[in-house]
Image (tube, rainbow, N blue to C red):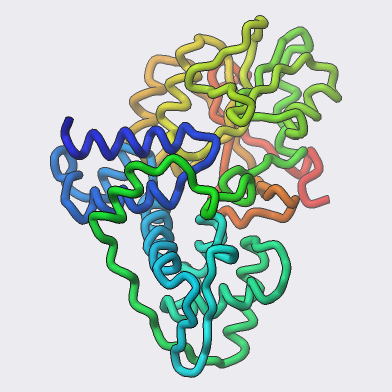
Length: 342
C-alpha cells in the first residue's frame, strides 16, 4: 500500500469516529506535507487539502498549527517552562481539549510563549475552558503589557507519526461537544419549516433528541427520526428502517464531499446546513451537476452554539444546501423573521 494511501485511510477512519481525533489528523497531515506525499497528485499542499479533504487554506493552517502546539505541550508536560521570569505549568490534566480552544491562541498571539502563558491563565481561572474564556484571557494579557519570550515548537519525529497512525483513543485530547460539534440555534431551524409538507417524515441524521431540529420540527407537528453517530448510527452506513421523506440537519463541516454524495445517493429531498465558502471549491460543481441543487441563503450569519450554549465564534456564513426542497433555485431570507437577535 502506498504511504499516502495508508495515511489518508487513517485520517478517514478518525473522521468517522465519534471522537474527532483532530490532533492525530493534524500530525498526519503535517507528515504528508513535510514528506511531500501530496505531490503525487497535487501541485501544492493547499490544493491537496482543498480537493482531497474539502479543507480551506485557513482551516488547514488552524488544524496543522494546533497539532504542532499540542505536540509541544505534550512534550513539556509536567514541566515548569520559565521564559523571561514567567512560569507556565503544563500537565496532562489541563491541556486544551479540542482545536477550537487553541484557535484563538494561534490567531491572536504572536508566539508559543504567549500562547502557553495565556493558556495557564485559562486554567488558573477554574472555569470550564471554552473559546470565549480563551479570548477573554487573551484580551486581559494584551492589556497587561506583559512580555513573554517565545518557546520553539517541538520537532515532530517519525515516532510521533507512528503513534498517531496507530492511535485508537484520544481521551486526553478530546472532550465531547465543545467545538468539535456545533449546535444549530432554533431560529435557523424555524426558517425551513415553511418548505416542509406536514405529511412528510423528516430524518435528522446528525441529531440527538435535544437537537433544535428535532425539538422544533416535533413542536410544529412533524414526525421526526433522529440519529447520531454516538448512538452507533453512522451516517455513512446507516439509514432508518422506517420510511422517511426528507433529510434536514446540520452535518459536520469536515468531509463535506462524502456527506453530500451520500445524501444525493438516497434520491430524496434534503436541506443541509453548510458553509458558503465551500462554493469556491471544485467539489460542489462536480457533485451537484445534474441534480436540482438549491440554496436557502440568509442576510444574517447563523450563530452556532457550543455544548454549554455559549456562542461559537465561527467566522464564516452558512446556508442550507438543498435538493428538490425549495420553490426556486435560490431563496433569500432574513433570520430576523424567526427570532434572530432576540
